[in-house]
Image (cartoon, rainbow, N blue to C red; front, side, top):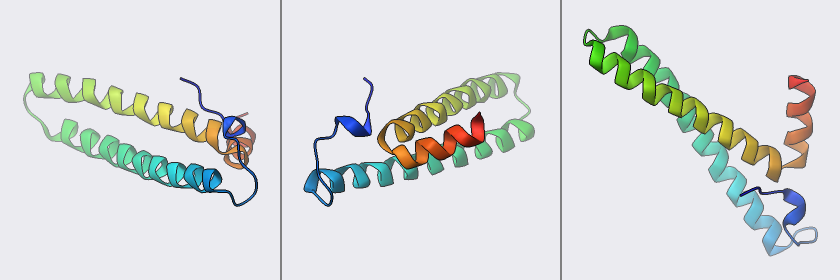
Length: 91
């Protein structure tokens, strides 16, 4: 499902606008958690001896990276200011 900031029907300071801000705060915290998980999995992969464990964690690591991309897309959709800044940095 695609979420866009424009789809939220609210005026300045409305309850719905506060809901979007709360949503964005939670999503950004989730993004931090995913990035920390990526760092942790990479460290563990370097330390592991078991090929099976390495393969499993590499698979999980790729999923975490996908989660980061999904959360960034969601932030991009819900926060037009952040979207503009991301677009300027990426493009």
